[in-house]
Image (cartoon, rainbow, N blue to C red; front, side, top):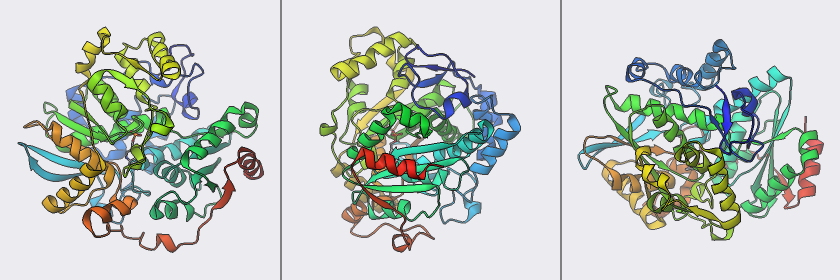
Length: 480
Ligand SMILES: *Cc1c(COP(=O)(O)O)cnc(C)c1O
């Protein structure tokens, strides 16, 4: 498989060649040169495979520069019930992403696809754990080292740290805004004692952390000398790893491949739902892909109107589903490339317009009429909706859901169709956003077994000013 840039002006590369990098040289994002097609017979033949072996069937189509036996071993090492059991008995975790059916509504079944039973209790573990093993493998093969620099407001940073801890050849420098994350989230990150993980608590807000990462990354000589890389959401390895659970969810929800399923995805940077789009392009019988946003509704606006209007950072609202607080959706360009019939020049023009004019309008473009065939639907949810949904799901079904999943359930209910099961992607567990659960239910969220004492563990974190040169010298002193 070769990978092309969405801006059509970079040489095609292989999976391992793009694995450790970020954007393509022309500023685009990588996508496969074609989407492998899965027939219904093939899909049915995958029923009953373990998650790791299902992952192998899918990923072997995308990473043919990793020998089969190595790929299978990597996947079996990654997707184990022990890693994804989150305090439950390992034998109830064999499916890795089991469906938690809530019940019948409007003539169909609605359920949660459980993606949050990995080490950091959010769906980002699904892809990041694999990335950790892939990075270690690729670096070893190339005889290289990598220093990952990132900024986090919570979920991404902790998923990256738990994926990279103890990995040979990798060191992580993670900037987080001091005192701005939930107590559980900071305890999760700062309690890691691994010598290859450095938590830098920056005196500032998340945007300051992100600006420092940008400034360091823009210093190309420094970046090259210190072998700096990132694991942000545009990484193709993360997107393709997420394709697997759409197949798993579909197979668990159906008996035959003549049936259809819809998915609702709580969305921010469009990484998760982009994987759903790719699964659908491969032939997975998905009826609708419902994009759920919070008050930061740039994606809902696009699917309703054809107008993409990126927000300025100052316009980005801080909400109670913070992992969906985005001003522009970094993976969205991948869908637009497909919508533009994979015309890289046309895509480049649109995203140059995002830079120069803040957005683009496809409502009068002929491609807008082709939108329907991609099956997208959308909706938005607010703090009040979130609270009401958390209360309702608790009362009706006795299940406590987190704030992001609540946005998903709220929007999913607006798109139910009789006879077509609806799976809402559960993107985090409620304990991560305990303040809002307390507000909604008047009682705290349950803490998964084994994590009760996490807030009192010793912490390994370095305080640092929001200052590029201080961060640079810390990196120089600690790179391997
Ligand atoms: C990252 C995240 C999201 C958004 O996912 P995208 O891939 O950025 O669309 C939603 N919910 C939670 C809990 C997250 O951590």
